[in-house]
Every structure is written in C-alpha cells, then in structure tokens.
Amino acid sequence: MIPVGYVRSPYREKFAVPRQPGLASRVVSEVVMEPAYSDPEAFRGIEQYSHLWLVFDFNLIREDPCFRPLVRPPRLGGNTRLGVFASRSPYRPNRIGLSAVRFIEVVRRGGRTKLVFSGGDLVDGTPVYDIKPYIAFSDSIPDSVCGIAAVPPARRRVEFSSEALLFIKSLESDRYPELQTIISDILSYDHRPAYRGVRGGDPNVYGVALYDFNVRFMYLDDVTLVMGLEPLGSYRDR
Image (cartoon, rainbow, N blue to C red; front, side, top):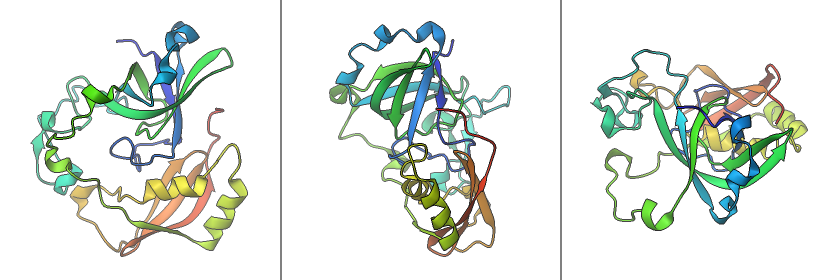
C-alpha cells in the first residue's frame, strides 16, 4: 500500500500518546497529503461529516516480523497476556491501525492539501493509507460488548509548578493555542508501562516531547505535577 499522506501532530514520540482516539480531544493535528493525492476535488463533500476514519501504519514498530500472537494490554496490568486479535496492539501481522477522529477542515497551503482533525492518537510522521467518513448508523453499535475496554481509563488531576505555568502562559499564541489545557488532557492519563507495576507516588521525573518542548513531570500520589518545559529542536512548520 502507498501512503496518501503523513500526520503532523504535537506527539513527537510514542510515550504519552493517548492509547485510544478521542481521549485528548483538544489536540489538533493534520494529514498532509502527498502531491499525487492533493487534488482538492478528492475532498469534495467531506464537510458533511463530523468524524472520519484514518487508516494508518504503526511505522515505529521496527521488529520484522512484528507479529506477536500474545500481547500484554495495559488494561490488564501489563502482565496478563491476550491474543493480538483480541486487542489493539500495534504488534500485528500488517501493522495497520484504525482511528476515528473529529473532522475540522480541509485547507490548502504551500501547494499541498491538509486535512485538519482533532482527537487523534497518532505520532508525528505517521503514514496514512486512507481516509473514510464515519457513518453513525452503521459504525456506532450502542449495544456492543467491549470486553476489557468497557469504560474509559481513569484520569488523574494535573497541576503545574509556578515556573511551568509562567512559561506556558508566555507561549500560548496562535502557534501553541490552549497549551496548558492540551498538556493537562494528555498527562491526565497514566502513561507508565503497566508491566513495571509502578503506580501512585513515584520518585522519577519523566519527560515527553510535545511540539517544541520536553515537558518534565512527576507522578505524585494522586496528582501529576508538571515541573517545567525545556526547548527541543524546532517543530516542523505547520
């Protein structure tokens, strides 16, 4: 299969990417279409839909082959094993992922067509193979049984040090709108590998690359504390 475009998102690494679409609903991303698929006519009528399906490649999985018949879902504590076809693990025979996202708009910049969406769970640079409309009467099944994923994951309270808050406020602009809210949305979930068995208070300082910054934070008993932001290499122009 040939990618029709590539994702641009604030998630510059796998760590802290939401484990399902829609969990960080305010995060805005784009699919930058490849030249062969940038004809605006290909998107005629897409504004009729509020949500879209993105079919993509788990391209950061380097193992070859990447197939694992048994995986360790975080929902089961990271040590109980489950069949890969009973999970959404990226360790699949063909590394194909599927995410439902909220459509915002289609824009044309620099001779390329860009599909803007929110609520994605995709790392920056992810190849996208296809875009399809979400059809509520067929795609939504209210009486479905969802096994181990019957309820959303628990959320934590997120607080900011005074230093981090001042720095964030100095950054919030057209380039980084709602930065504090976006960081809160992302870090309200516990992203530590479940198999390590570390929960609650944790003396470690963690970092996650978002936009142009390494966001440094700690997991206290029931609070995630954002300690500061350190500049990284420049985020690609959007």
